[in-house]
Image (cartoon, rainbow over all chains, first blue to last red; front, side, top):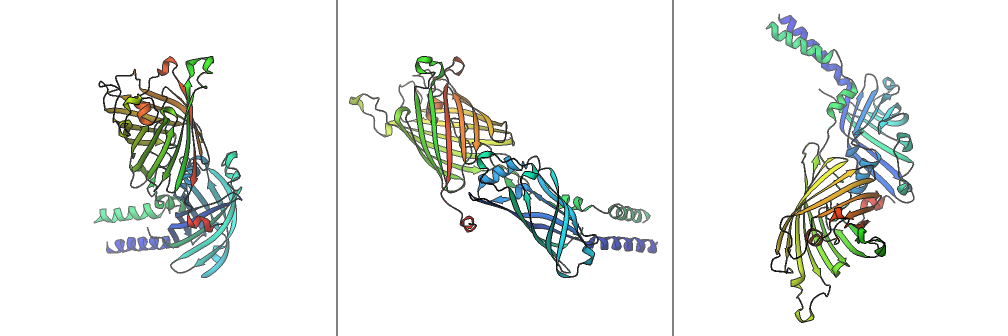
Length: 181
Length: 298
């Protein structure tokens, strides 16, 4: 009997050992920036969730569009209600892979990430380079990429077309900690 | 004992054999922090009267409102367009929740001033809260010299006060509803039969038809109307168009005045008999206080 119990304890431990191959953050940072001659628009999101599976290099990122904070309340309202339609498409998601993850060493590495970015309900495949810092108890991922507003079928009315850039620069900084269930 | 082992066995199998997809984990971890529900109404007015909205700190809102004459006044009056009255207003947001304002209406040459204070915000997420509430209080001074020179009223005689509790809820991005219990005090009334203290209840709504266009309606029921005039309840229907910092509202109403005491207490038009005043509100927001961080971007 004791052996059986011991067996299950071992099974449980082994299983929980597996999940240590995942690193998670709930306070990831994503910011986007739109520059035109008329005005610069910037919004920050400090509540980005991101998870990396160190066994496979798979990465998934999600954020709520509503959590983007703008300088002007009216901009935030227009962003959510008119442009990205947060009530219909509350989340932006990324699902992809850090290429050649198994070849990375501890410390700072340059990596390529490829995957599908979903914004405003539209999927787009993106490939971007990033910097990854691997430590025993932390994985930091920092990078930037550029997306076209048009691609995500976000309609910009004519009157403000000069205020909003056609391409938006997105920066991310994600500090993952070991994920325990 | 065996049962316990079985349970442990079951749990360990069910949780681990099917290893969780990364996205499933994120779905469980993403947190919707509570956020203020914005844009219950697009502007600070529903139609004639105020909405719960206050502009953010440092914004100066310039308002120009027009009401023409009655549509049923015929071609001779060009369907009311010959006769127009205008109100200019300036509203300044001292904080995100406190607004002070002044205005001047050509109708009865009336000056007005008011304070709006938002005490509750509708929120969603963790600490959700169902409604927004704003207190409104105003004073108006009529300066039209329509009195007998022998019997000149004092400044205080011509003051009227209005207080409102504006309570609103944005039920969905497309539908908002507001109720406004109202109290009006006239320092002097035309006849002794008229009440100095008047109570009314208003209801207003906004229905969005596209990202920038919405339909609005507003109605005030008067519990103890003035007796010396043949007063009616105020009704306003219209369309709101929003473009960037501008809000433009087209209004059809049986009220002539754009001030609370005027349209709630002194409306005489019968909307469904065609006593309709066409009008519009235009508002333009100026950001007077620039964020320091924002300036650094340039």
